[in-house]
Amino acid sequence: MKTLSAKRLVAFAVAVAVICLGFGLYAWHSGRSVMDTVQAADAGTVIKLQIDSPTMTINGAQQEIDPGRGTAPIIQDSRTLLPIRAVIEALGGSVTWDGETQTVMLAYKGDIITMVIGSTTAYINEDAQTLDVAPIVIDERTMLPIRFVAEGFKLGVDWDGDTQTVTVTASATEENATPDADAPTVYMTTSITPEALVAIYEKLGFEPQGKVAVKMSTGEPPNSNYLRPELIKDLVQGVDGTIVECNTAYGGSRSNTAMHRQVIEDHGFNAIANVDIMDEDGSLVIPVPTPENGKSTITEDYVGAHLANYDSLISLAHFKGHAMAGYGGAIKNMSIGVASSRGKGWIHSGGTSTTNIWGGEQDAFLEAMGDATSAVVNQFDGRVVYINVMNRLSVDCDCDGNPAEPDMHDIGILASYDPVALDQACLDLIYAQKDGDGASLVRRIERQNGLHTLEHAEEIGLGSRTYNLISID
Image 1 (tube, rainbow, N blue to C red):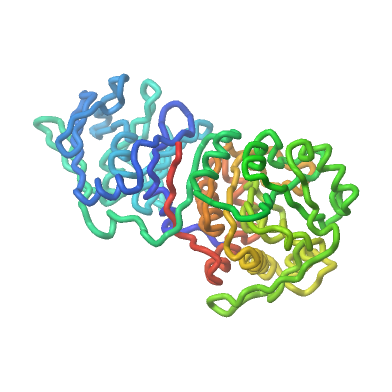
Image 2 (cartoon, rainbow, N blue to C red; image 1 turned 30 degrees about the vertical axis):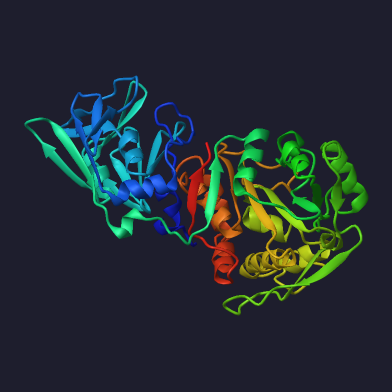
């Protein structure tokens, strides 16, 4: 099985926001922009903390470690423990907290440190390490061993026994100071509301032309986790969009237009917008552009014939697991989702059949999704943006009418002009919890070799797996 390398987690190293510890809340702190982070690192950062003192200095400027709460570093078993959030934030890194598993994850400059409260086993990226003292929680604040964290992130750390002061130093080097200026941007909000969905779309600055298609799943009845009309209404109406879908190729309640229209009505989509079943009048064959590496699995794509009626497209995907692809996000929405019934067979089979979605070679199927997405992007001459909603994170797709209940908590909404970067960012957030409540979803992804979709998509020039993550909260 292929796994994510630490380098693919670069998003967290350039994230502008920090997850607040101690409350079990997954909320980004929006105190600095990417450029703020870069400029701070360029100057170098020296942080001083003193045992039992609730203040610290950052490059000589004093501030409270934990405003209003008086949290201070302590010594336990001859090791210094401190509330780590303030230090990691000051360095431009990020911290996540999983209250159910009592797991803390720190990310800085492409490296990840994971610890569990009460456990002396920690991980630097994927390498297990033994701690001298376990992390603890005091007054709803997580206290971590500073020397282990600092050395794990290759920071300087010094101890002055006379004054009981810890000094953490981040050197200003070109390598660790500057995010990849050429990498695409992925925006994120942890709020999953109609207002947040509109806000993240507006952050993209997209100016659609002509008739706007909003591609999303209408959801298999009776109990799938499709995006509800109440969530998407303001966005769809704000762009004067038409919700577009295609019929399925696996049977079920959406396998022909008449039944599918009834599902659309039952699920409330007709009440908020016009809905177009794009393959009601058959398929349109569009070419797959010659990829940068010259290696496409399919050379043409069968999409719903009505796709030709639209000038701009917004991919609005529910990110979740998938029984065949491992996961579903922007690329699946743009390939299988835009494909006609015939096209679904074509992609699933890796270009060997338009009538049978079963039995195809797995990697060919995954590669064909990337190829088909590139064909759709080419059809719109790049007038496409992508939004993934990370809620109801079941291992099963919205094409499953009775999906497994999610093990993982909701995460937020992410958006980008780059579908590869967007799906990669979502996967990184899932893999950050691979030893916690994301374990079942990671197993599903790896069982289906799901990461190969992004490997191939990057190889053919569809997008980049390296990205800069920016919070809008």
